[in-house]
Amino acid sequence: AQRVTQPEKLLSVFKGAPVELKCNYSYSGSPELFWYVQYSRQRLQLLLRHISRESIKGFTADLNKGETSFHLKKPFAQEEDSAMYYCALIGSGTASKLTFGTGTRLQVTL
Amino acid sequence: NAGVTQTPKFRVLKTGQSMTLLCAQDMNHEYMYWYRQDPGMGLRLIHYSVGEGTTAKGEVPDGYNVSRLKKQNFLLGLESAAPSQTSVYFCASGRGDYGYTFGSGTRLTVV
Image 1 (cartoon, rainbow over the protein chains, first blue to last red):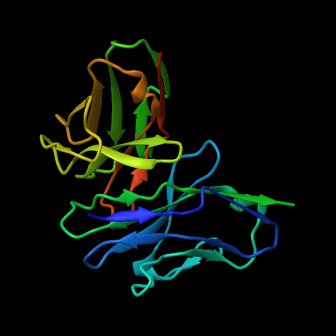
Image 2 (cartoon, each protein chain N blue to C red; image 1 turned 45 degrees about the vertical axis):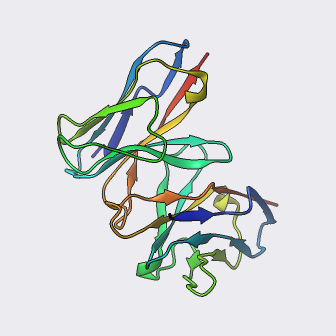
Image 3 (cartoon, chains in turn purple, green; image 1 turned 180 degrees about the horizontal axis):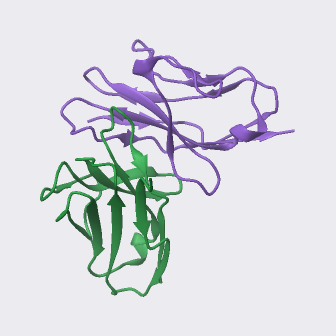
């Protein structure tokens, strides 16, 4: 069975501080990992995926297979980063179904 | 370009009532999904479809039925609503490996 764990329900940081949203997964094969974001009163949207190794809105995430982690990082938090963040995984043979973590709410304060 | 449209946006049901949530997409996607979002539990897959006329159970299918009679529409039905089905329901379409397109959600309260 595949599982995604986001240990923090809430992460509160000051503006300008570094951000790290933790995500760990369990999956026996080679997973594809994603981060989705949901801003207040908006629909969920894809933030980034590990396979493309891109940086979106200053966020990056590296897949660490040894630690089975895919933590989301940003060096300097902005107020507009306040949102709900979900880590998600696709396993092989799953018809592209995403398994989501429980989410972490990021709160950036002045 | 509407993407994924969900109707209704809000609904209050009494226990035992039935209702249907509609999801419509205009992107010609084969894959469509219904998730429910609950505090502390994230998004859990209810049912999904890999093409017109096909449906399959997800992680939490009990109490729900679905139909995909047309490629662009994916309906989620509650035959006899229960308070445990109070949730926010999200429809999504597309392949997960390319990134889902989500609808704006339906907030359902069962009293």
